[in-house]
Length: 251
Image (tube, rainbow, N blue to C red; front, side, top):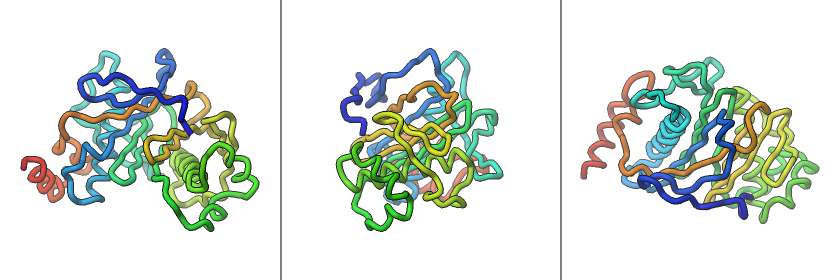
């Protein structure tokens, strides 16, 4: 889905693994991801997933604020009444997080945003009919190389839109309709959505049309995992998990 548009950036300080061209003069959003190498020493999968999402959010927020201001030591996260995450340090910003199989992605934006990452893998074929109209799926088949990619593409775009809307699991995905507007750009019930493919994952991103173009997504491998900072949340540190994690990383 991103094939020919993917470019590999030179690593800087061991962090940037991949980037996409974009208009840096119109920075209304930052999207970042981290891979499994970052949390490879965390044995528990659910904790690794959560940490990868927090790391992605921390990096996305730091990148978003690279304008001369000093961001907090870590991006503590809270949740709005509709379930959407937000940054208590800057409640006027919007953010979204997703993780899958030890990979995490996050977006920070000036306007509502939603992001979702899913693994391309075989699933029950009936699931496609559950999330999409046949005419909708038929119009998108030419953009992908397999039924697994088609389902993952539609799922991530709709999940990202649901997150941007703040509706969570309360909205059946089949009620949303995905329409391609370009090779990697889409319209979902009035929202702009874009798709990226990274390794064996698909990332869907939904945002308001006021955002500028197709936001870049960058993948990071921080030199070390700041466990104590990432496990600190708006409600306080997750003491049990943080303690075991620190022991794992110190070995």
